[in-house]
Length: 50
Image 1: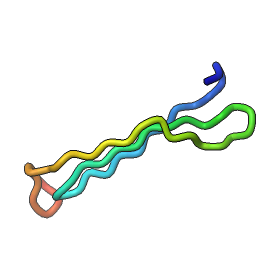
Image 2: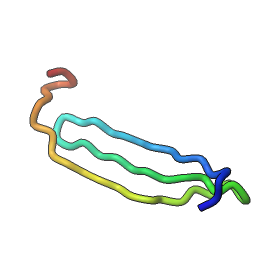
Image 3: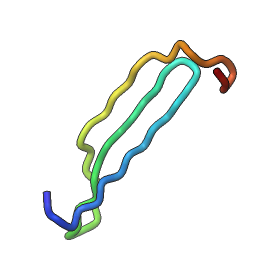
Image 4: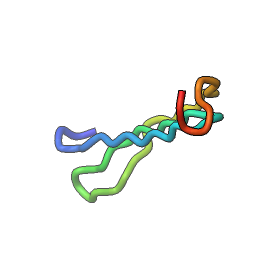
């Protein structure tokens, strides 16, 4: 990776799962590159609240 790349993070907090994706945009051409993804069960929410 280069010094001028920008990291981006997306997170989805749902009632059943929490998902996340991490990537960066290439400084030369602006193309997004995925670095990692994750998913975990969510058992602490009901209808959008605690």
